[in-house]
Length: 232
Image (cartoon, rainbow, N blue to C red; front, side, top):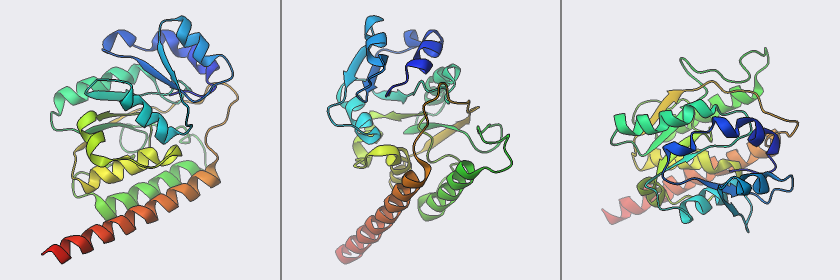
């Protein structure tokens, strides 16, 4: 998934293990910096979005592939391409896993804010993690409910029915795996620094969207519980 990530693409392209996968697809969020053209010239299948948004990018990826498992990777520099093959191994080791997440929190993991004294992004992520685990998780604690560096089986995707857009797609997918008791496997990753001058998602507005999603999922749980009680 890309949108104006030409700096990262140029630097990381040769490190990505394209040959380890049956299909390689790039969802382009209407880039204007030559990202899509760079990849297209190198034989990568590029699908340009007609409806923008990260959540839509996930839907576009599943709609344009036939693979049973999709690994989501963004070449912005935060995600180590050396970790991509680990997803394959984790699914081999955990046959029942519906989702695998590269976690930036917990033992053995490194968050890009760890070297700072003030860690607002990391602390907010931890808060959202704790809330989701307390409300819905009845299995092993999941340390990183939000990180986009993850892999999802098609069976899981079809079951959890993601309907959000933007950067809340990962959080919703984790929450709905909790709700459906779909096993999630994590492995520690070293989050790296972003390549280039482009900034990430706006923190305040993104935080508001996460709160809205959380409230929405709580209401859906209440409605579902009420319907189940009325049936019995």
